[in-house]
Image (tube, rainbow, N blue to C red):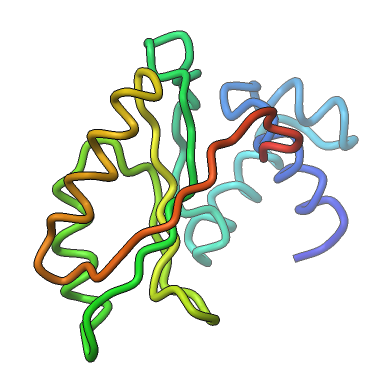
Length: 142
């Protein structure tokens, strides 16, 4: 990957619908040259896919929180994933270092809905306890 590939990725990251012609004019390549590079980046696994970013607030999911999940001893990541994937409110989840076993990003309609989600999480047999942090102002989103 070179500087031109990085520039192409930057343009696609901002708007994956940008035409190859527009990107080409910004990186001094023809549209077909940009397409060949994008095809190569896809084949190499650098570009894993294209997606649509949706504003959760516009869909009524305006409350966001990060929930630390502390699990029962020897709970595997696969078991955690099997539980967390059943929650439509879970946007992302990762195992982490430190006291918590996982950190879960949750979207909810409001604080009451968030409270219900956290209560359901706490009721899961693998969960010992949770600790939540509500997002006030998102500062950087990429």
